[in-house]
Length: 464
Image 1 (cartoon, rainbow, N blue to C red):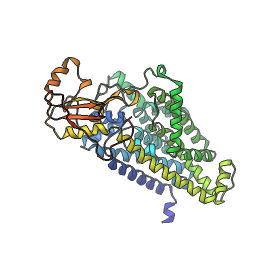
Image 2: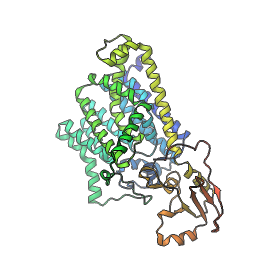
Image 3: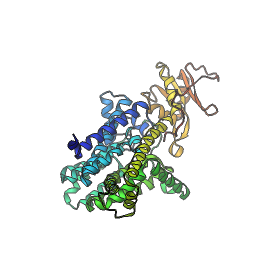
Image 4: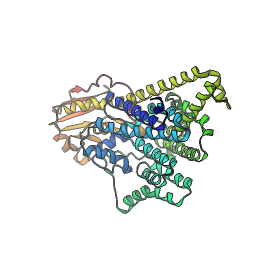
Protein backbone atom coordinates (compact mmCIF):
# COMPACT_ATOMS: atom_id res chain seq x y z
CA UNK A 1 0.00 0.00 0.00
CA UNK A 2 2.83 2.39 0.88
CA UNK A 3 4.46 1.94 -2.52
CA UNK A 4 1.16 2.58 -4.28
CA UNK A 5 0.90 5.95 -2.58
CA UNK A 6 4.34 6.91 -3.88
CA UNK A 7 2.93 7.94 -7.21
CA UNK A 8 1.48 11.01 -8.84
CA UNK A 9 -1.63 9.11 -9.91
CA UNK A 10 -2.48 8.25 -6.30
CA UNK A 11 -2.14 11.91 -5.28
CA UNK A 12 -4.34 12.95 -8.22
CA UNK A 13 -7.06 10.51 -7.15
CA UNK A 14 -7.04 11.60 -3.51
CA UNK A 15 -6.98 15.29 -4.50
CA UNK A 16 -10.09 14.79 -6.62
CA UNK A 17 -11.89 12.90 -3.85
CA UNK A 18 -11.04 15.52 -1.22
CA UNK A 19 -11.95 18.44 -3.48
CA UNK A 20 -15.22 16.91 -4.63
CA UNK A 21 -16.33 15.74 -1.16
CA UNK A 22 -15.71 19.14 0.48
CA UNK A 23 -17.46 21.01 -2.32
CA UNK A 24 -20.50 18.73 -2.35
CA UNK A 25 -20.78 19.05 1.43
CA UNK A 26 -20.92 22.85 1.11
CA UNK A 27 -23.40 22.68 -1.78
CA UNK A 28 -25.92 20.80 0.34
CA UNK A 29 -25.06 22.57 3.61
CA UNK A 30 -25.79 25.89 1.87
CA UNK A 31 -28.22 25.19 -0.99
CA UNK A 32 -29.23 28.01 -3.25
CA UNK A 33 -27.27 30.33 -5.48
CA UNK A 34 -25.24 33.49 -5.06
CA UNK A 35 -23.46 36.41 -6.75
CA UNK A 36 -25.00 38.17 -9.72
CA UNK A 37 -23.29 36.53 -12.67
CA UNK A 38 -24.27 33.19 -11.16
CA UNK A 39 -27.87 34.33 -10.70
CA UNK A 40 -28.05 35.51 -14.33
CA UNK A 41 -26.50 32.29 -15.61
CA UNK A 42 -28.94 30.08 -13.73
CA UNK A 43 -31.88 32.19 -14.89
CA UNK A 44 -30.64 31.70 -18.46
CA UNK A 45 -29.82 27.99 -18.16
CA UNK A 46 -32.17 27.12 -21.05
CA UNK A 47 -29.77 28.97 -23.36
CA UNK A 48 -26.13 28.47 -24.36
CA UNK A 49 -25.68 32.16 -25.21
CA UNK A 50 -26.43 34.44 -22.27
CA UNK A 51 -25.72 38.18 -22.05
CA UNK A 52 -22.36 38.85 -23.76
CA UNK A 53 -20.63 35.90 -22.09
CA UNK A 54 -18.70 33.20 -23.90
CA UNK A 55 -20.65 29.94 -24.31
CA UNK A 56 -18.43 27.09 -23.03
CA UNK A 57 -19.33 27.37 -19.35
CA UNK A 58 -22.98 28.13 -20.04
CA UNK A 59 -23.10 24.96 -22.14
CA UNK A 60 -22.49 23.00 -18.92
CA UNK A 61 -25.53 24.58 -17.24
CA UNK A 62 -27.54 24.09 -20.43
CA UNK A 63 -26.69 20.36 -20.41
CA UNK A 64 -27.67 20.13 -16.74
CA UNK A 65 -31.02 21.73 -17.52
CA UNK A 66 -31.61 19.45 -20.52
CA UNK A 67 -31.32 16.35 -18.34
CA UNK A 68 -33.54 17.88 -15.66
CA UNK A 69 -31.07 18.61 -12.88
CA UNK A 70 -32.07 20.92 -10.05
CA UNK A 71 -29.96 23.88 -8.92
CA UNK A 72 -28.29 21.82 -6.18
CA UNK A 73 -27.64 18.95 -8.59
CA UNK A 74 -26.21 21.35 -11.17
CA UNK A 75 -23.95 22.83 -8.52
CA UNK A 76 -22.81 19.28 -7.75
CA UNK A 77 -21.78 18.91 -11.40
CA UNK A 78 -19.86 22.18 -11.11
CA UNK A 79 -18.22 20.82 -7.97
CA UNK A 80 -17.04 17.87 -10.06
CA UNK A 81 -15.59 20.21 -12.68
CA UNK A 82 -13.82 22.20 -9.96
CA UNK A 83 -12.45 19.00 -8.44
CA UNK A 84 -11.22 17.94 -11.89
CA UNK A 85 -9.25 21.19 -12.13
CA UNK A 86 -7.68 20.47 -8.73
CA UNK A 87 -6.79 16.92 -9.82
CA UNK A 88 -5.15 18.18 -13.01
CA UNK A 89 -3.20 20.82 -11.07
CA UNK A 90 -2.04 18.03 -8.74
CA UNK A 91 -0.80 16.15 -11.79
CA UNK A 92 0.98 19.32 -12.93
CA UNK A 93 2.70 19.68 -9.54
CA UNK A 94 3.81 16.06 -9.89
CA UNK A 95 5.22 16.71 -13.34
CA UNK A 96 7.09 19.76 -12.07
CA UNK A 97 8.48 18.28 -8.84
CA UNK A 98 7.78 14.56 -8.55
CA UNK A 99 5.29 12.48 -6.61
CA UNK A 100 5.98 14.21 -3.30
CA UNK A 101 5.15 17.59 -4.83
CA UNK A 102 1.89 16.11 -6.08
CA UNK A 103 1.01 15.03 -2.54
CA UNK A 104 2.08 18.42 -1.19
CA UNK A 105 -0.44 20.03 -3.54
CA UNK A 106 -3.39 17.89 -2.35
CA UNK A 107 -4.35 20.28 0.52
CA UNK A 108 -4.96 22.99 -2.09
CA UNK A 109 -8.23 21.12 -2.76
CA UNK A 110 -9.53 23.03 0.28
CA UNK A 111 -8.41 26.52 -0.81
CA UNK A 112 -11.35 28.77 0.12
CA UNK A 113 -11.83 31.15 -2.84
CA UNK A 114 -11.42 28.26 -5.28
CA UNK A 115 -14.02 26.25 -3.38
CA UNK A 116 -16.46 29.16 -3.15
CA UNK A 117 -16.37 30.10 -6.82
CA UNK A 118 -16.27 26.63 -8.35
CA UNK A 119 -19.53 25.48 -6.74
CA UNK A 120 -21.48 28.50 -8.00
CA UNK A 121 -22.42 29.12 -11.66
CA UNK A 122 -19.14 30.85 -12.45
CA UNK A 123 -16.64 29.92 -15.15
CA UNK A 124 -13.46 29.73 -13.01
CA UNK A 125 -13.83 25.96 -12.50
CA UNK A 126 -14.09 25.22 -16.23
CA UNK A 127 -11.34 27.71 -17.06
CA UNK A 128 -8.84 26.23 -14.61
CA UNK A 129 -9.65 22.67 -15.67
CA UNK A 130 -9.00 23.59 -19.31
CA UNK A 131 -5.77 25.49 -18.61
CA UNK A 132 -4.27 22.91 -16.25
CA UNK A 133 -5.32 20.13 -18.62
CA UNK A 134 -3.43 21.81 -21.46
CA UNK A 135 -0.38 22.23 -19.22
CA UNK A 136 -0.37 18.58 -18.19
CA UNK A 137 -0.69 17.46 -21.82
CA UNK A 138 2.19 19.78 -22.65
CA UNK A 139 4.45 18.18 -20.03
CA UNK A 140 3.87 14.88 -21.85
CA UNK A 141 4.58 16.65 -25.17
CA UNK A 142 1.11 15.88 -26.50
CA UNK A 143 1.16 19.24 -28.22
CA UNK A 144 -1.71 18.72 -30.64
CA UNK A 145 -4.10 17.88 -27.81
CA UNK A 146 -2.62 20.60 -25.61
CA UNK A 147 -3.14 23.23 -28.33
CA UNK A 148 -6.65 21.96 -28.98
CA UNK A 149 -7.56 22.17 -25.31
CA UNK A 150 -5.94 25.57 -24.88
CA UNK A 151 -8.12 26.76 -27.76
CA UNK A 152 -11.19 25.96 -25.68
CA UNK A 153 -10.05 28.74 -23.33
CA UNK A 154 -11.17 31.16 -26.04
CA UNK A 155 -14.77 30.03 -25.49
CA UNK A 156 -14.67 30.06 -21.68
CA UNK A 157 -13.38 33.44 -20.54
CA UNK A 158 -12.44 36.67 -22.31
CA UNK A 159 -9.61 37.10 -19.81
CA UNK A 160 -8.28 33.80 -21.17
CA UNK A 161 -7.58 35.30 -24.60
CA UNK A 162 -4.25 36.82 -23.44
CA UNK A 163 -3.40 33.38 -22.03
CA UNK A 164 -3.81 31.94 -25.52
CA UNK A 165 -1.57 34.66 -26.99
CA UNK A 166 1.14 33.99 -24.40
CA UNK A 167 0.82 30.25 -25.02
CA UNK A 168 1.43 30.70 -28.76
CA UNK A 169 4.48 32.92 -28.17
CA UNK A 170 5.82 30.51 -25.56
CA UNK A 171 5.37 27.48 -27.80
CA UNK A 172 7.46 29.03 -30.66
CA UNK A 173 5.85 26.61 -33.07
CA UNK A 174 3.48 27.58 -35.91
CA UNK A 175 1.35 24.57 -35.05
CA UNK A 176 0.42 26.31 -31.79
CA UNK A 177 -1.80 28.63 -33.85
CA UNK A 178 -4.35 25.80 -33.59
CA UNK A 179 -5.09 27.17 -30.13
CA UNK A 180 -6.77 30.17 -31.77
CA UNK A 181 -9.70 28.03 -32.88
CA UNK A 182 -11.93 29.00 -29.93
CA UNK A 183 -11.39 32.73 -30.34
CA UNK A 184 -11.92 32.40 -34.09
CA UNK A 185 -15.14 30.43 -33.63
CA UNK A 186 -16.53 33.06 -31.27
CA UNK A 187 -15.64 36.00 -33.50
CA UNK A 188 -17.15 34.22 -36.51
CA UNK A 189 -20.34 33.43 -34.63
CA UNK A 190 -20.76 36.84 -33.04
CA UNK A 191 -19.84 39.08 -35.96
CA UNK A 192 -20.38 36.77 -38.89
CA UNK A 193 -23.46 34.81 -37.85
CA UNK A 194 -24.97 37.42 -35.54
CA UNK A 195 -25.02 35.41 -32.33
CA UNK A 196 -26.75 37.31 -29.52
CA UNK A 197 -27.16 36.36 -25.90
CA UNK A 198 -30.39 35.82 -23.96
CA UNK A 199 -30.95 38.35 -21.19
CA UNK A 200 -32.87 37.17 -18.16
CA UNK A 201 -33.12 40.75 -16.92
CA UNK A 202 -32.61 44.26 -18.32
CA UNK A 203 -29.73 44.84 -15.89
CA UNK A 204 -26.51 45.56 -17.78
CA UNK A 205 -23.77 43.30 -16.41
CA UNK A 206 -20.94 44.67 -18.58
CA UNK A 207 -18.06 45.78 -16.37
CA UNK A 208 -15.40 47.22 -18.64
CA UNK A 209 -17.17 50.12 -20.37
CA UNK A 210 -15.99 53.49 -19.11
CA UNK A 211 -13.73 51.91 -16.51
CA UNK A 212 -11.03 54.56 -16.69
CA UNK A 213 -13.54 57.34 -16.08
CA UNK A 214 -14.41 55.57 -12.82
CA UNK A 215 -10.80 55.14 -11.66
CA UNK A 216 -10.23 56.55 -8.20
CA UNK A 217 -6.75 55.99 -6.70
CA UNK A 218 -8.00 55.86 -3.11
CA UNK A 219 -10.62 53.21 -3.92
CA UNK A 220 -8.09 51.18 -5.91
CA UNK A 221 -5.60 51.27 -3.02
CA UNK A 222 -8.34 50.29 -0.59
CA UNK A 223 -9.34 47.31 -2.74
CA UNK A 224 -5.71 46.29 -3.16
CA UNK A 225 -5.43 46.28 0.62
CA UNK A 226 -8.48 44.03 0.85
CA UNK A 227 -6.90 41.55 -1.54
CA UNK A 228 -3.67 41.56 0.44
CA UNK A 229 -5.71 40.86 3.55
CA UNK A 230 -7.43 37.98 1.74
CA UNK A 231 -4.00 36.61 0.82
CA UNK A 232 -3.45 35.94 4.51
CA UNK A 233 -7.00 34.98 5.47
CA UNK A 234 -7.30 32.38 2.71
CA UNK A 235 -3.88 30.82 3.31
CA UNK A 236 -2.51 32.01 -0.04
CA UNK A 237 0.43 33.60 1.78
CA UNK A 238 1.87 30.18 2.59
CA UNK A 239 1.58 29.08 -1.03
CA UNK A 240 3.51 32.23 -1.98
CA UNK A 241 6.24 31.20 0.48
CA UNK A 242 6.32 27.75 -1.10
CA UNK A 243 6.50 29.25 -4.59
CA UNK A 244 9.45 31.45 -3.65
CA UNK A 245 11.34 28.39 -2.38
CA UNK A 246 10.20 26.09 -5.17
CA UNK A 247 10.78 28.37 -8.15
CA UNK A 248 14.54 27.63 -8.51
CA UNK A 249 13.74 23.90 -8.58
CA UNK A 250 11.25 24.07 -11.48
CA UNK A 251 12.31 23.82 -15.10
CA UNK A 252 12.79 27.32 -16.53
CA UNK A 253 10.50 26.77 -19.51
CA UNK A 254 7.40 25.93 -17.47
CA UNK A 255 8.23 28.44 -14.79
CA UNK A 256 8.48 31.21 -17.36
CA UNK A 257 5.03 30.40 -18.79
CA UNK A 258 3.37 30.34 -15.37
CA UNK A 259 5.03 33.60 -14.28
CA UNK A 260 3.99 35.42 -17.44
CA UNK A 261 0.44 34.13 -17.09
CA UNK A 262 0.47 35.26 -13.46
CA UNK A 263 1.60 38.75 -14.47
CA UNK A 264 -1.14 38.89 -17.11
CA UNK A 265 -3.76 37.78 -14.58
CA UNK A 266 -2.59 40.32 -11.99
CA UNK A 267 -2.95 43.08 -14.61
CA UNK A 268 -6.43 41.81 -15.49
CA UNK A 269 -7.35 41.74 -11.81
CA UNK A 270 -6.22 45.35 -11.36
CA UNK A 271 -8.37 46.39 -14.33
CA UNK A 272 -11.23 44.33 -12.89
CA UNK A 273 -11.00 46.16 -9.55
CA UNK A 274 -11.15 49.50 -11.37
CA UNK A 275 -14.14 48.40 -13.44
CA UNK A 276 -16.14 47.04 -10.50
CA UNK A 277 -14.96 49.67 -8.04
CA UNK A 278 -14.54 46.91 -5.48
CA UNK A 279 -12.54 43.77 -4.76
CA UNK A 280 -13.82 40.26 -4.09
CA UNK A 281 -12.44 36.85 -3.21
CA UNK A 282 -13.18 35.65 -6.74
CA UNK A 283 -10.17 37.72 -7.84
CA UNK A 284 -7.91 35.33 -5.90
CA UNK A 285 -8.96 32.14 -7.67
CA UNK A 286 -6.93 32.16 -10.88
CA UNK A 287 -3.72 33.91 -9.71
CA UNK A 288 -3.19 31.59 -6.73
CA UNK A 289 -3.88 28.49 -8.82
CA UNK A 290 -1.10 29.53 -11.22
CA UNK A 291 1.68 29.51 -8.63
CA UNK A 292 0.32 26.91 -6.18
CA UNK A 293 1.87 23.91 -8.05
CA UNK A 294 5.27 25.60 -7.74
CA UNK A 295 4.44 26.25 -4.08
CA UNK A 296 3.96 22.50 -3.62
CA UNK A 297 7.48 21.92 -4.97
CA UNK A 298 8.72 24.44 -2.39
CA UNK A 299 6.88 22.70 0.44
CA UNK A 300 8.76 19.49 -0.33
CA UNK A 301 12.05 21.37 -0.24
CA UNK A 302 11.21 23.00 3.11
CA UNK A 303 10.26 19.62 4.53
CA UNK A 304 13.58 18.10 3.46
CA UNK A 305 15.48 21.01 5.01
CA UNK A 306 13.50 20.76 8.25
CA UNK A 307 14.31 17.04 8.48
CA UNK A 308 17.96 17.64 7.76
CA UNK A 309 17.84 15.74 4.46
CA UNK A 310 18.95 18.83 2.53
CA UNK A 311 21.12 21.82 3.33
CA UNK A 312 19.56 25.26 3.66
CA UNK A 313 20.54 27.76 0.98
CA UNK A 314 18.22 30.71 1.54
CA UNK A 315 16.54 32.66 4.32
CA UNK A 316 13.30 30.73 4.18
CA UNK A 317 15.14 27.42 4.09
CA UNK A 318 17.33 28.44 7.04
CA UNK A 319 14.15 29.39 8.91
CA UNK A 320 12.69 25.94 8.17
CA UNK A 321 15.89 24.32 9.44
CA UNK A 322 15.66 26.37 12.62
CA UNK A 323 12.00 25.56 13.43
CA UNK A 324 12.45 21.92 12.48
CA UNK A 325 9.85 19.30 11.62
CA UNK A 326 7.47 20.29 14.40
CA UNK A 327 7.45 23.90 13.28
CA UNK A 328 6.79 22.98 9.65
CA UNK A 329 3.99 20.59 10.69
CA UNK A 330 2.44 23.35 12.81
CA UNK A 331 2.46 25.71 9.83
CA UNK A 332 0.88 23.05 7.61
CA UNK A 333 -1.87 22.41 10.18
CA UNK A 334 -2.45 26.17 10.40
CA UNK A 335 -2.71 26.33 6.61
CA UNK A 336 -5.25 23.49 6.52
CA UNK A 337 -7.35 25.12 9.24
CA UNK A 338 -7.26 28.51 7.52
CA UNK A 339 -8.33 27.08 4.16
CA UNK A 340 -11.17 24.98 5.57
CA UNK A 341 -12.56 27.85 7.64
CA UNK A 342 -12.12 30.35 4.83
CA UNK A 343 -13.98 28.19 2.30
CA UNK A 344 -16.87 27.52 4.68
CA UNK A 345 -17.09 31.17 5.73
CA UNK A 346 -17.04 32.52 2.18
CA UNK A 347 -19.79 30.21 0.93
CA UNK A 348 -21.94 30.98 3.96
CA UNK A 349 -21.36 34.73 3.51
CA UNK A 350 -22.23 34.73 -0.19
CA UNK A 351 -25.38 32.66 0.34
CA UNK A 352 -26.46 34.95 3.18
CA UNK A 353 -26.22 37.98 0.92
CA UNK A 354 -29.59 37.28 -0.67
CA UNK A 355 -31.50 35.87 2.30
CA UNK A 356 -34.28 38.49 2.05
CA UNK A 357 -35.17 37.47 -1.51
CA UNK A 358 -35.04 33.77 -0.69
CA UNK A 359 -37.48 34.36 2.17
CA UNK A 360 -39.87 36.22 -0.17
CA UNK A 361 -39.46 33.56 -2.85
CA UNK A 362 -40.47 30.81 -0.43
CA UNK A 363 -43.75 32.62 0.33
CA UNK A 364 -44.37 33.25 -3.37
CA UNK A 365 -43.90 29.57 -4.21
CA UNK A 366 -46.63 28.62 -1.75
CA UNK A 367 -49.14 30.21 -4.11
CA UNK A 368 -48.37 28.95 -7.64
CA UNK A 369 -51.71 30.18 -8.92
CA UNK A 370 -50.96 33.78 -7.87
CA UNK A 371 -49.82 36.47 -10.29
CA UNK A 372 -47.21 38.47 -8.40
CA UNK A 373 -46.29 42.12 -8.70
CA UNK A 374 -42.80 42.58 -7.19
CA UNK A 375 -41.30 45.85 -6.03
CA UNK A 376 -37.78 44.68 -5.19
CA UNK A 377 -34.90 45.75 -3.07
CA UNK A 378 -32.72 47.81 -5.42
CA UNK A 379 -29.34 49.41 -5.95
CA UNK A 380 -27.07 46.85 -4.32
CA UNK A 381 -24.25 44.60 -5.48
CA UNK A 382 -21.33 45.74 -7.68
CA UNK A 383 -21.74 49.37 -8.78
CA UNK A 384 -25.18 49.41 -7.07
CA UNK A 385 -26.88 48.30 -10.30
CA UNK A 386 -28.73 45.14 -9.22
CA UNK A 387 -32.11 44.38 -7.69
CA UNK A 388 -33.98 41.63 -5.87
CA UNK A 389 -35.81 40.33 -8.96
CA UNK A 390 -32.48 39.04 -10.28
CA UNK A 391 -32.11 37.08 -7.07
CA UNK A 392 -35.62 35.60 -7.20
CA UNK A 393 -34.99 34.34 -10.74
CA UNK A 394 -31.50 33.14 -9.88
CA UNK A 395 -32.48 30.99 -6.88
CA UNK A 396 -35.71 29.48 -8.21
CA UNK A 397 -37.61 28.39 -11.31
CA UNK A 398 -39.73 31.55 -11.27
CA UNK A 399 -39.52 33.89 -14.28
CA UNK A 400 -40.39 37.51 -14.87
CA UNK A 401 -43.37 37.73 -17.23
CA UNK A 402 -44.51 34.21 -16.35
CA UNK A 403 -44.70 33.75 -12.58
CA UNK A 404 -44.23 37.37 -11.52
CA UNK A 405 -43.78 40.87 -12.87
CA UNK A 406 -40.85 42.95 -11.68
CA UNK A 407 -41.89 46.59 -11.35
CA UNK A 408 -38.60 48.18 -12.56
CA UNK A 409 -38.45 45.83 -15.56
CA UNK A 410 -41.96 46.51 -16.86
CA UNK A 411 -42.56 48.95 -19.72
CA UNK A 412 -43.96 52.08 -18.01
CA UNK A 413 -46.73 52.24 -20.63
CA UNK A 414 -47.93 48.78 -19.56
CA UNK A 415 -47.20 49.03 -15.84
CA UNK A 416 -50.66 50.11 -14.69
CA UNK A 417 -52.47 47.40 -16.65
CA UNK A 418 -50.12 44.66 -15.42
CA UNK A 419 -50.31 45.91 -11.85
CA UNK A 420 -54.12 45.81 -11.98
CA UNK A 421 -53.96 42.25 -13.35
CA UNK A 422 -51.71 41.06 -10.55
CA UNK A 423 -53.51 39.25 -7.75
CA UNK A 424 -50.65 39.36 -5.26
CA UNK A 425 -47.85 41.69 -4.29
CA UNK A 426 -44.32 41.59 -2.87
CA UNK A 427 -42.84 44.86 -1.72
CA UNK A 428 -39.46 45.68 -0.18
CA UNK A 429 -39.80 47.89 2.89
CA UNK A 430 -36.58 49.68 3.73
CA UNK A 431 -38.01 50.84 7.06
CA UNK A 432 -38.66 47.23 8.07
CA UNK A 433 -35.62 45.74 6.29
CA UNK A 434 -37.92 43.04 5.00
CA UNK A 435 -40.18 42.07 2.13
CA UNK A 436 -43.90 42.34 2.82
CA UNK A 437 -46.05 39.80 1.00
CA UNK A 438 -49.76 40.07 0.19
CA UNK A 439 -51.18 36.88 -1.27
CA UNK A 440 -54.49 38.65 -1.91
CA UNK A 441 -53.89 42.25 -2.89
CA UNK A 442 -56.92 44.51 -2.57
CA UNK A 443 -55.19 47.81 -3.18
CA UNK A 444 -55.37 48.75 0.49
CA UNK A 445 -52.19 49.95 2.12
CA UNK A 446 -52.26 47.41 4.92
CA UNK A 447 -49.37 45.35 6.23
CA UNK A 448 -48.92 41.98 4.62
CA UNK A 449 -46.96 38.98 5.83
CA UNK A 450 -43.31 39.63 6.56
CA UNK A 451 -40.93 37.38 4.62
CA UNK A 452 -38.75 36.11 7.48
CA UNK A 453 -35.40 34.49 6.64
CA UNK A 454 -34.93 30.96 7.88
CA UNK A 455 -32.41 30.06 10.57
CA UNK A 456 -28.89 30.30 9.19
CA UNK A 457 -29.89 32.77 6.46
CA UNK A 458 -29.03 35.91 8.37
CA UNK A 459 -25.93 38.02 7.98
CA UNK A 460 -23.27 38.03 5.33
CA UNK A 461 -22.40 40.07 2.30
CA UNK A 462 -24.38 41.76 -0.40
CA UNK A 463 -24.49 38.87 -2.81
CA UNK A 464 -21.86 40.36 -5.08
